Amino acid sequence: MSDTNGSGANGAPSLNVLVQYVRDLSFENPNAPRSLGPRDKAPDIGIQVNVNAKQLAPTDFEVSVSLDASAGEGADVLFKLDLDYAGVFRLVNIPAEQIHPIVMIECPRLLFPFIRQIVADATRNGGFPPLYVDPIDFLALYQQRAAQAEQQAPANAN
Image 1 (cartoon, rainbow, N blue to C red):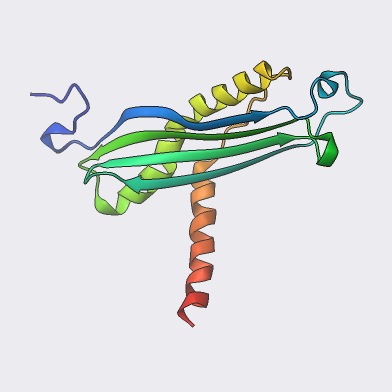
Image 2 (image 1 turned 60 degrees about the horizontal axis):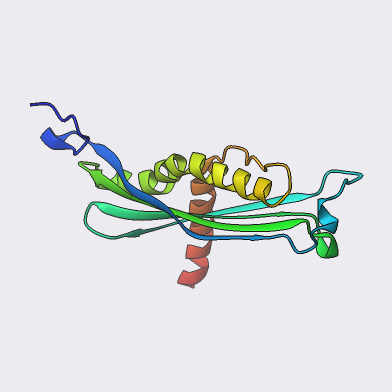
């Protein structure tokens, strides 16, 4: 019998998205309508991304991606967007040493297209051209976070 529903039957590894959702979304347009007029130059856009995860059950993990975006600086802020988007994933028959990388790299990668669309829609609905977030290298983000943890570990041991 083959596993047609992705449940990991017969020992086959599987990764399933059980649910995904917006946990928090905030869009601020503090200087409207003045900020919506023509501009001489493109605004500075800043984007920060953070990935967090927690285990809900032996095979289930909630993964959340927090994205903060802003355009402009100081008193000339055009907009500020904060998004916390999450999903619950089921990992079955995955070797233990591969679970953490899958949860922190592959799960956010699956959520990203939805995050990108929400950001584009929110900025467009705020009166600006849609902000299309460039693809995020979640592997590099994971490696950077691991390197930071490794550097902090010796400092904490002293």
